[in-house]
Length: 287
Image 1: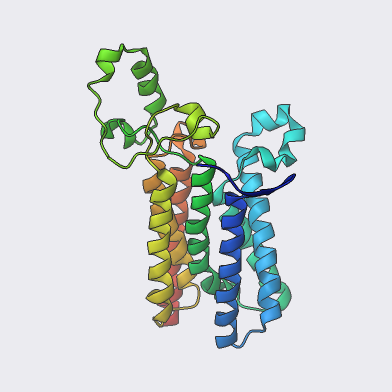
Image 2: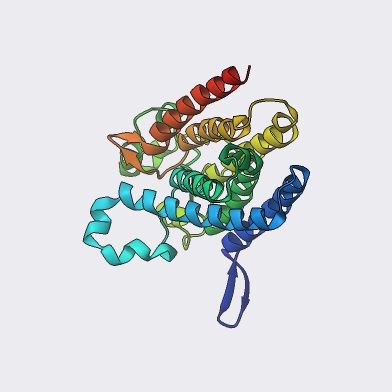
C-alpha cells in the first residue's frame, strides 16, 4: 500500500486527500439535489457545506488536543501541526453540529432540516474516507491472532497481552492461530506496519467503511422516505455511527482513553443515549 496516488515533481497527491475530496464532491452534489427538492437555494447549500466542513475539522482537532492535553501543553507549537496527524471524528461531529446551528441561525433556516439533509452523506463520506486510512496504514486493528476475550474486553488489555506475547518463545507463539483469513500486512513505513511489523492485522478501517456504507443506504434510501419529524434522520445518524464506532473500536489497536476506558466507547454511548431520547421527544411532540 502506498499513500501517494500521484506525484508530479514536488507535488504529491495522496489517496487520503483524494478520498476526502471525492467524498466532499459527491456529498455536495447530492446535497444540492436535496436542496432543490426542498426549495433551498444551491448557493446557501454550498456555503453551508463549507462552514460545516471547516467547523468539523476544527472540532476534530480541538477534541484530539484536549484528550492529549499534557502533550500539547508541553509542545504548544504542535497544536497547529495537523500534518503530523491527530483528528477525532467525535469532535468533528460536534464541531459540524455547532457550525450547523450557527449557520442555520444566521440564515433563518431549520438546523434540524439541514442536519437531516447532510446526515446520510456524512456516513457516505466517512465510508469513502476510510479507504484513505487504508492507504496510509492507519486506524488499524490488532493482530488477527489476538484472542476474542482480549478484543472484546471493555477495559483495554490488548497491549498488556501483546507485551506478554512478544516475551514468549517462538514455539509458544505458534499456539495462537489467526482467527480470520482477511488480515492485512502493512508496510513498515506506515503507522500500522511500524507498530506491528510483518503481522496480519484486522482491517478496522474497512470494517468501519462497510458499516458506514450500510448506514448510508439505510438513511438515504429508507429512512429519508419515511414521514418522521424533522431531525429524526440526523439523530438516527448519531445512533448508527455510535453503534458502528463502538463495535469497530474493539478491534482498533489505538484509541484515545478516558479513565481507563476507550474514549470512543464512552462518547459514543453518551451520544447514542442522548440521540434516542431526542428522537422519541421530537416524534412524540409531532403527534
